[in-house]
Length: 394
View 1 (cartoon, rainbow, N blue to C red):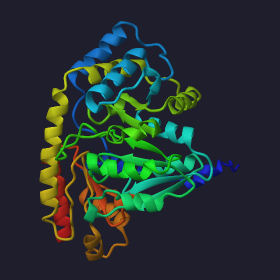
View 2 (cartoon, rainbow, N blue to C red):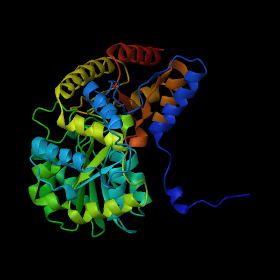
View 3 (cartoon, rainbow, N blue to C red):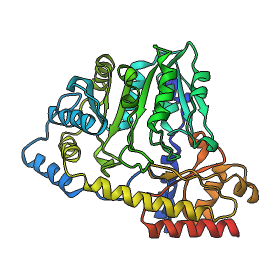
């Protein structure tokens, strides 16, 4: 029997990060010693006071449904977070809590996009953005950035990409996979372009906000472009900064109508996020911030080590980043030296011959590159780079 599947599935492919991680796990199960630098997940444990808050919530019996868009306590904590960290004032009605920032992004696309709409996505991009757009029957318009401009979309590029069909621009700041960070001035320049196009909204994915060592403090897009605040949906969460990836708590803030539509969509899909995880997120957002400071310092140290060591390998050029926990080195020369077809073939061969799992850059719209996650100990990172260097020299 042949089962007919929905045609929309023909427009997307499984996540490359998930598939390479699964392949690495299979090799590990076969007894291979694998170093996986493919997953976008902090290696630190969730802070103790956050775990304690979850245990206390269970003891209080907070194990029932919450409101679809999040508990009152967590939404109040998120309102406080935006006011404290970003200088943005929102009402609880302008907040939605979802099962991770990924669901918030997906809900926003479903709420805003119709067939024929276009969505501008700077490349390299997080692998799921184009798929989310296509699942909403809209079309991704990829704007290719360059290392010469720090992998940042320029205002003139944005202006050239906007058409009558443009409905949304997705900005990921700090960026996965490049680690690039837009300054306040950068964002203001993009905002000047968008101000001239009232139909276009912005999805600002700021999930890596607290993992940032830019020359100036992190700036939220809605803060840098206040005239566009009512045209901006800001997405964030606790997965990355607070090492709570498995707790699955993301959130979004934006115009009443958009957040209301996202709530309607969520009511017919997952309903509320986990009640215990919401209690833990309250403790994270409202509690001690030492964890954020310490992990940011650790990521910055790892970043410096990885960039320096990669740039010592023949055939590898690695541009420094300013946030997140990834680097995105150019490996085109290494691909050619090894007689390989592309970055996908390189990652497959690296995994097979060295046991190091990386993600091909083509999955992020950056052919000839690889994404390396440095969410691992310095010892693990050194061991992985030793293997890559030996592979390159062999």
